[in-house]
Image 1 (cartoon, rainbow, N blue to C red):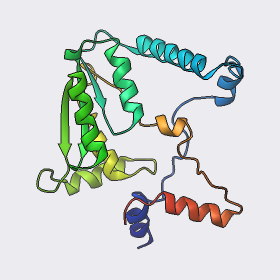
Image 2: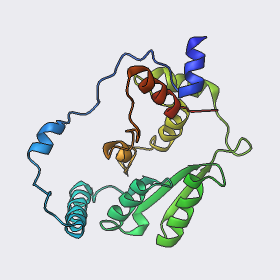
Image 3: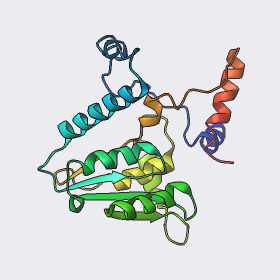
Length: 207
């Protein structure tokens, strides 16, 4: 019963064994070898950041792949990725996708973006009358997961990313906010209990 309560609140349970970060990334090393930007003006920092981003997109762009698939949300990360990909590929090679329910920002904003830039778009409407959740598929997918992440969102992303990898490239800004510190709370926790309570409240997946 405890697992059910955990799942309903967080979208996942706490019985996962693999808690290791999945990438080999030494943040201390990266910071140590980064240039000193402390004396840069806001304008100079912005220009430097733009050039770094452009180089990254150029270096990662595989011209041999037929279609570039970009999941779009209402946030800035996916929009930045779309801009970087547009710098390196024609519109005909770009396909965007979004999901949600009509009226939600993550569903409505992408439609405005793709209209402005005239790129292909597929919107997955999750209203019950338009989308059927396959219970067996959900359970099978959840059993394969080895980290605690919300099952329903992850399942939709799994469907998006299930096309053949030899023809498509997937661009995702899923961790953009977290890498920039979006997961840090803006208020101080003075003790462990307060920190735990804050985490529980912030991580609420359903009402």
